[in-house]
Length: 212
Image (tube, rainbow, N blue to C red; front, top):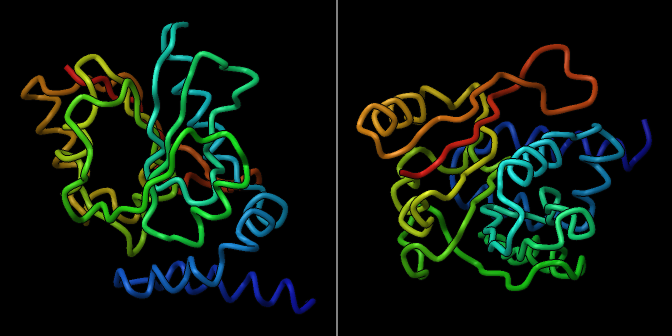
């Protein structure tokens, strides 16, 4: 195994062992420069692009502003060439990951923020939200959903992934069921799926919600 492979393996091991926000922040500080190479070339990471296309295809063809929640280096960015009517902002808690994302030159604006705290963004600011790779080990639970829905306009779409290991333990199953039954959201898609090109079984769930 090469030194690069060993480094990637170590970072992945750290990712699945994250338990606190401090550990997560240190992990992505160390991983930012090589994250894309590890995830795309090394692991065949497909969930960001799959979720992005699912969201973009659900939106009407007209100008809209999308927030990439937990954008990291920008892997879930909706291709501007394919969907030129969409404007995209990004939010992440890692300054190092945001620095890499900025180099893509496709975000209108990038914000550093902690999803465990209130967001300094006005209500109903965004037409759509996308979030992949954030609802997973050691990140945030379903407690952040009310604040995210606050900044989403009525009728807006929210797409992304939730890892199977945190779906019930971090309250997502309960929160989604409660919001759907109360009429606050409509679940347009909810399906198990793999995160990687070679996944033998689903790592989590792909979702598409519509805010009422």
